[in-house]
Amino acid sequence: MRKNIIAGNWKMNKTLAEATQFVAEVKNKIPATDQVEAIVCAPFPYLASLVEQAKGSNVKISAQNMHFEDNGAFTGEVSPVMLKDIGVSHVVLGHSERREYFAETDETVNKKAHAAFNHGLTPIICVGETLEQREANETKSLVGEQVRKALEGLSKDQVTQSIIAYEPIWAIGTGKTASSEDANEVCAHIRQVVKELTDAATAEAVIIQYGGSVKPSNVDELLAQSDIDGALVGGASLEADSFLQLVEAGAK
Ligand SMILES: O=C(CO)COP(=O)(O)O
Image (cartoon, rainbow, N blue to C red; front, side, top):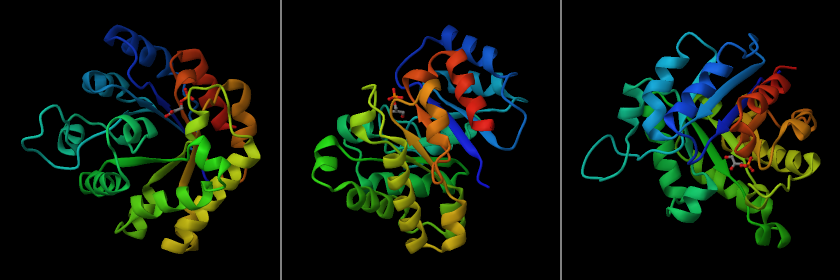
């Protein structure tokens, strides 16, 4: 049985004091079971100190983005080498907000996925459709294409280790969740695409999260679905209590 991975994506929120307080509150309360993994995706300036703070606990620390190059003249960017150097384990790639506001494309997501593996970071690769695309019945073809492009050229081993997050854009921060059946249908389609790209064992192993207005009141139903293996959570991951409830749901 696949485990659940609950990742809290704080986006551009919290002061250092608030970030530190959060990790202090949650780090000894993560259920000690292999069934669940807890990840905090924090803003760049806090990563190094949160990694130190989380040492010896079951909380992993992730970045929310990175550049694909190791170093160079890319003012304002952060490289995979830097993230690895400070002990970050995961990196969110291709979040819809990066795609919409910062010109992220399937091609750069793919370059970043390769760069992540080249430096021992685990990518959390985000895909998802807009409301217009859903209404035009394009969800599966669009999401399938995003997955194909993001994973292009990765080995089966690397695909197995990747985390894919299905986040319908219309459900992000809107309070609208995809019904658990609809979310599961798209996650199952993603698994099918992974199978076509690799093989049945890889598709069976890959972790596929759902994201979009996940909260303690709807997480159980989502995680009960056959192809949903955790959640990428924005708003409801900002409070320690609520994050812990989500992680506990993942441990069931
Ligand atoms: O974008 C998201 C996580 O990456 C989802 O955000 P919300 O949980 O706030 O809808």
